[in-house]
Length: 164
Image (cartoon, rainbow, N blue to C red; front, side, top):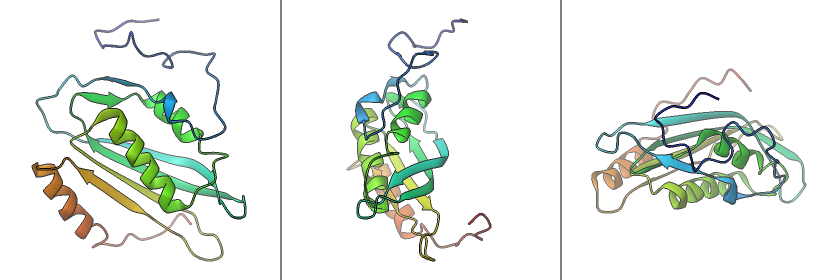
């Protein structure tokens, strides 16, 4: 395995071929590493087009693309741990809005980012789709103002839906 100067000694999932997949919600699988550019604002964006969860009433599967964008501070989420975490929703029963807010809350608790937003674009069931969006900016900072502005302007330019 090639080693880099990245701080990876605390990561247990990256490169591990013996990882066990959790089939119910498990935020404990999330891992972080140090941000190498803590003095710079920049976005990290994850697009997760294979998110699945279960309807808590019918147990039918719900499918979505989850978009996670954040401005890191000191810690960043490791991508393989994020994949395993999102996979852990597969057999978890939760409404769309709950899932998106839980993801954001877990990532805030994990990393304490300057700013984060999570947007779930769920495929239609019964002829309607639900696309919950939530965000957070650190209180008392410009990121709190940014969160307010982005929330108010969130869907000003509706997308053209071509994939559902």
